Amino acid sequence: MSGKKTYTYTVPVNIKIETINKDKIKEIEETLSLCIDRKLEKLNILLKNVDIYLINNNLIVNDRYNANLNFKEVVNEFGIDIKEEAIEGLKGKTYILGDLLTKLLATLDKQYDFSKILNIKDLKQEVIINPNILFDYKNLEEIYDKELISFLKEIRKSGSVNVKGIETITDGISMGVVSDQNRVVEKLKNYLNNIEKQVHKNNEYLQKGTTELIYNRARQMGYSVKKEINNKQVQLVLVRTE
Image 1 (spheres, rainbow, N blue to C red):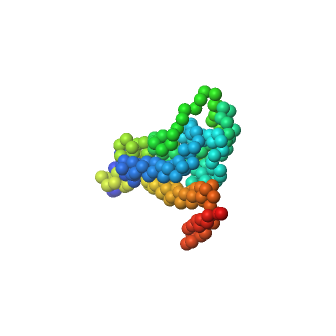
Image 2: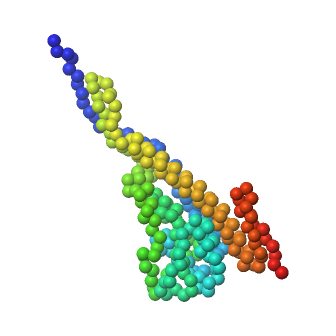
Image 3: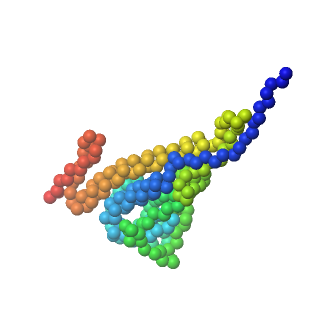
């Protein structure tokens, strides 16, 4: 006597992943933009005296009369990449400034608006910028790859990520679903953790940069400045020189 035959079949299923939603995307955009805002608002004290141009999210800062001493040191403390370059058509000292936070915004199809804080000028035709000297942050593509960017775009559009799976059913009982769900959820969680780390790091840069900015401004105004460490915080002691 033969046993009862089992009937097994598979069906496609669609799994909605809501690890990140539209509101979270908007929150990340606003947070990253605010991080850049706060740094540029501080640096604008120095940037008001120079000519500023913008190419591919890189600031081209031309300090024609070398008015800003220790400019590179101050900018670096704010967590902004900077290097000095000789550029045809620009006199004096010229610096290239880049911030990886603008790259993170770009993964969300969001371009940072530098003009809301800085006075951005148009480059003259005789000024030649070699694109190879600009900061591009291509190394970030290892973490924020094409797949992740496609997920973020899908979330912006529909509010979630949809993953296809295959459910096996035997005699009317589900044997489980095989899908990429766990991997996708983990990838989105890692993205959130990375963004959180970048924001935390940026807040530390803001404190360091502000301290360095005050330190250098005070010295230019004729003060003798001493840095002291108190509970891991840098404090400045100003003494007027006679």
